[in-house]
Every structure is written in C-alpha cells, then in structure tokens.
Image 1 (cartoon, chains in turn cyan, brown):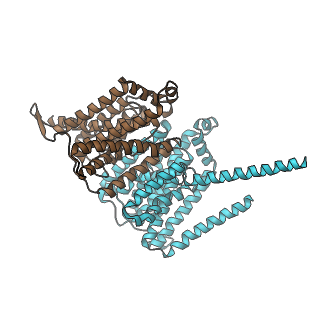
Image 2 (image 1 turned 90 degrees about the horizontal axis):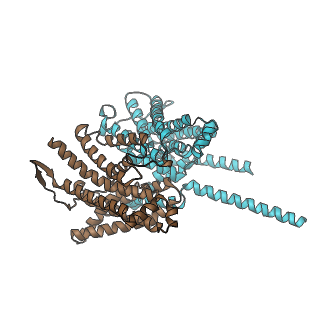
Length: 332
Length: 291
C-alpha cells in the first residue's frame, strides 16, 4: 500500500517535471518570461519557507536578499565574470548578510522580529537606491548578459527558462535533503519549542543564525538568476513589497510544507497573469482571493489538502476499527 | 535658527498626524492582536471617500461627515466583521498577512475606481504663514498640530477618565476578568475599531492637503506610523503619541542635517536600536511574550 503510494507520488513528480520541460516549448517570449519568473520566485520563497516555515523565524526581508543577490550578480557579470562565479558571490553575500540579520532573532521573536527585518528591508532598498557608484542608483544596471552554460548560449528565452528550471531542481533537491537531515529536525525543534530543543542539546543559537543565513542564501540564488532574467535591474523591484509578496507566497502555499512555495509562487506570479483579462481589476481580485483563502485555511492551500488527508485517514482507521469490532462480536 | 524652528514646527505637525495613526494601530493590537499592515491605506482611503462625496455635489463640511461615517462603516465595522473576526482565532501571522493583501486591494480599488493621479485636497486649516517674533511660521503646520493634539488629548481623556474608557482598557488587558465583572467585551472591541476608523479619517483629513490624495500615499505613512508605534511602545497609547512626535521631528531634522537621500533611514535605525535594546518601546511596559 505505502510502496504503491510512493511509486504513485514518484510518477506524479516525474510527470510534473516532464510537463514543465515539454509544455513551454512552444510558449511565446512573454509566457517563458513569466514561467522563468515563477521558477526564480519559487527559489526565493523556498528560502523563506526554510526560515519561517521550518525554523519559525518571521522574516520580512527576503526581498532584500533577492536584491543583494541580483546586484552582486549584475555588477559582476557586467564586469565580465561568468554567471556561476557571480552566483557564488551572490550566495556568499546574502549568506553573510542573512547571518548578521539572524543576530536580532536571538534577542527578539515573533512580531518584533518581523519589525526588525522590515526595517532592514527598507534600509537595504535605500542603499540600493542611493549608492549609485556601486548600484547605478535609480538608473539601475542595464545590459546584464545571459550566461553560456557548458557552451550553450542562454540568450534565447527557452534555454534561459531551462537554466531557471534546472536551478530550481537543484535547489529543491538540496532543500529536500536539508529538511530530512538532522539540521532540518533541529530547525523544526526550534520552531516547535525552542526551550525544549535547547534542553535536548540543540545549539539553538547556531541553528537560528543558520536558519536565517541559509534562507537568505536561497534568496541570493533567486536574485542571482533574476538579474540575467530581466537583463536590467533597478531598486524598485526589491522594495518592501517584494518581501511582503514572498511572505504571502509562503503562507498562501502552505508554510512548513515542502511544496508550499511552488504553489504560493504559482498563485502570486501566474494568477495575476490569468486574471489579466479583467484588466485593472486583476490585482484587486488577487487580493480578495488571498484574503478568502486565508479566512478559509490559514495554513494555506496545502493546509487544506493536509486536513483532507488527515480526515480520510481517521475515517479509514475508524472504519477498520468498526469492522474489527463487529468481527470480534460475531465470533463471540 | 529660523530654519530649525520651521523644521521643528513642520516635524511636530507631521509627527502629530503619525501619532494619530499610531494610536489607532496600538489600540487594534491591544484589543485584538491585530497588526494592521493596511493602516497606511486606511489613512489614504477616507480622503478619497470625501473627494467622491464632494464630486457628487456635497459641500466640504458634509463630505467630511459622510467620509468619517463611511470610514467607520468600512474600515471599522467592515474590517472587524469581515476580516478580523474570522481570522482572529488563527493567530497573529495569518491575520497580518491578510491585512497585507487588504492593503493591496484598497490601493488597487482606489486606483481603478478613482484615479491613478494625485488629486488636490482642500485644507481645513488656513494655509498662509503668520509672523511670530519676526519669523514666518506655517499656519497650516501649526493648525494641523493643534487639531491632532486636541484629538489625541480627547481620546486619552476618554480612555483614562471615563467609565467607558476604563471598560475598554479592562477589555484590552484581561478580557476574561473583564467579562466576569460585567464589561461588554465584544462591544468594547468593536468600539476600538470604530475609534481607529475615526482616527485614520481625521489623519487623512489633516495630511492629505499637505501631500495630495494619491492611491500609493499610504505606504510611507503606514510605515512611519508603524515605526512610531513600536518606538514609543506598542502597548501604550501615550507611547504611540511620543513615538509619533519623535519620528516626525526626527524625519524632518534628518532630511535637513543628515542627508535627503538617507532621511528615511534614520527612523529605521532608531527602530532597530529600540527593538534590540528596549523591545517594549521607550514608554511601554514589558510584555512577557515579546522576548
């Protein structure tokens, strides 16, 4: 039974991957851009899901880390660095900044932590806008080159989409492994009961910092891909609303669920596009949809699924119990 | 020197408006653990409600009354019944996220149904300058400051000196005991939402003539009020007032003496320092759950 379910899940996963690879082949430029954006935002949301969903540390600064990664990658690739090396610097930079932002989390928690990270997010935006010697200020950085990967040029939208999808795959595997490793368990212990985690010998201090740093580093990966995707960056996309959007993606998809960010990013990036036929109303409808969803299920879309499965399991279990009981009675 | 005086007056005027908004913010937090990320949009909307009423042909004074009433219905009653009540039992974070979505919704609705352009808005206080000891002082700043302070003083008197205010405080501090001694807790919570709606409508009335009515103007204002509330003390009305005035003055002084580019950074840095070293705020009492 469980082996069957496992194969079923594996097959579903393979079908989804194949679909993501095959279906976009005859998409137009814009469709591919949106799908690439979905992949990039999913990576950033996965990072936040690690920090918030698994380790329980509220962060309103994930957008700033996407910005850090994007600027690092944009500045270096326009100076002739290859993208993988620039991406490495993006990851390192956002990892270090994320580590530093973790220190306030050692002192304050919950909404106070949210406020500190919110302030940090706005400060980062001011730095992007004002330090024009480095970031080009409000004029931004243009002509960001797209990379050659193993000799393949990714200038065209389709190859670049595959690059984003491939990166998403790699990040997903890494996160999948991480949350099943002792580290992932330590993160969850931190979320569920920090005091108890500490008494059981989990170094809560180190894991809190790590939760921030790794989550932020994934934001850096997303940023590092975002820069060559749009080929032009300025400070505006990395303001507070990106952080809030990413937070919404995680919560709407299902915080603490592995596939939550995939769904959340799909809703945040694709739903507005699907609603475009409603013209000026699409963001309004999006906002209403998010509110209704949260009223119905505060644990997000996967929370609904989770509850449904749990219900079915209890029903199956009680049915089995009833059968067993009636059998016992007939024997007597 | 005259420059400093101007800056102080202008800073106190904006600070007093921040204080109005921040007080509403802390009231919602105290009575129903609502972190309202749409508070800035709540300030933006009433100005448009008033403008729409005026476009329909009503005189300014009537538009103000209708605007405040509509704001009480939409941002007080509607907000509580349609969003906060169904979400409250789910905890702080989902509710906060829902208010973020609400902020997007309000902004887009105004943009769609009204205008994406900034509209001028009539002032309720005179806009010319008066001369005090040979210095020209903006009567508008002075008027805004006086009106905002009067409102805040009135509200504080209501909370601290009347039986109704004591019941509201009791409902906020310990709902269970308040219910036992016969305080209608539900009604008191609704009352704080209505008070918040009136406060944001008044703030809207005061600040919109200065910064024009625009769908996006709530973002900056909301964040400033938010910072003011936390710096002053998240759980104290007087903290929010002090925080509002402090942030207003700081904002104006840093624009003049630090750099215009980083003027917005100064309140943020103050915020971070305050949270790290005095999380209960400058005037707040400490809460067990904060740290």
